[in-house]
Amino acid sequence: GTTIPIDVFFAGDILLYAIALGKEGSAGWWCTYCKLMKDEWQTVCHEKGLPWTIAELTVHAELLLQSTTATSARERKGVKTIPVLKSIPISHYICSLLHILIGKGNNILEHLIDEMQAVAESYSDEYIQAQRDI
Image (cartoon, rainbow, N blue to C red; front, side, top):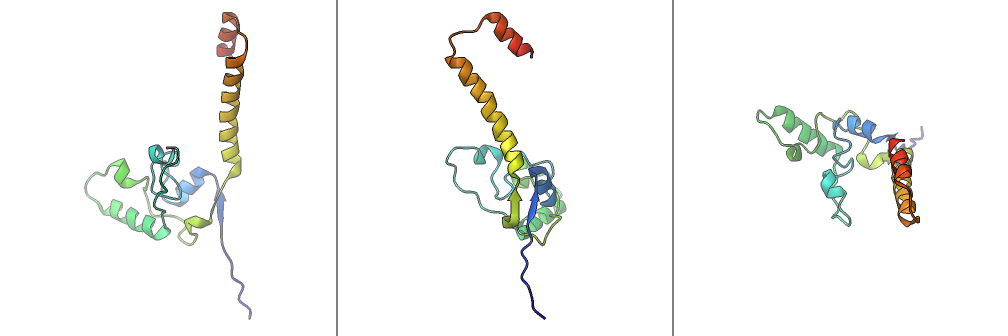
């Protein structure tokens, strides 16, 4: 018989990635792909973080689970349990464009309205209060 090579990919939102990687509850704070925390990966022109592998996540989780002392958030790196999907490498996790576009779209819309108002001639105090109330 003929063997057909198959690459398996994983697609979902950031929460599902976090659950699959054993990092549930850390989706907003820790990068899915590397070991950087939010304050590091949100910095403009930040240095590239060290990438995770499923094997490294597994070893890290096992060490944390065996530890008898409390560990800090930076030591845990968002890891809570052993990864659920050990057969799919993190490089095969496909980022959900829908969630990125929703977040970025909302951000752009919010700032666009602010910018439009900043360059407008002026708004009455009543208008500004009505907008805030909405």
